[in-house]
Image 1 (tube, rainbow, N blue to C red):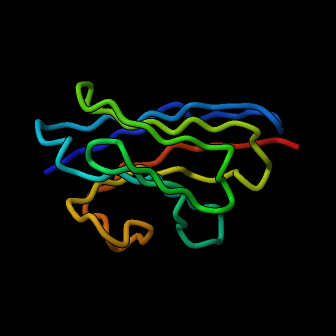
Image 2 (cartoon, rainbow, N blue to C red):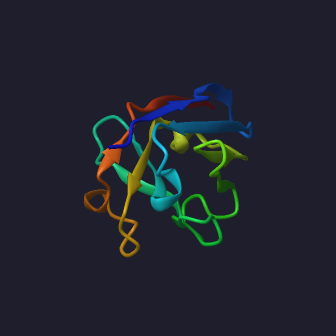
Length: 124
């Protein structure tokens, strides 16, 4: 069982930056690949980024590539999402998720554990 708690969301102007954190409970954090997803009002939850168990492999949605960076610190049981050059279309609730799987990590259904989400609002 893994419990995830996101933090770091807020209101920022276009072009600004935010750093999201996701703290995980338990002693097996390093055995899970981690992902960030987001959901805007009236839309389906969509993939943002994922990172491998050890942190050496990352993958991003085209819409955030070059602007967002996912990273993890297994000693602190935490995964991060650094978001730069934010746009109004980045406005959403951001969720972190954990999975013991190693393939198809861009899909919501591949993740077993989810946080409660943190709101990110980018004003124009």
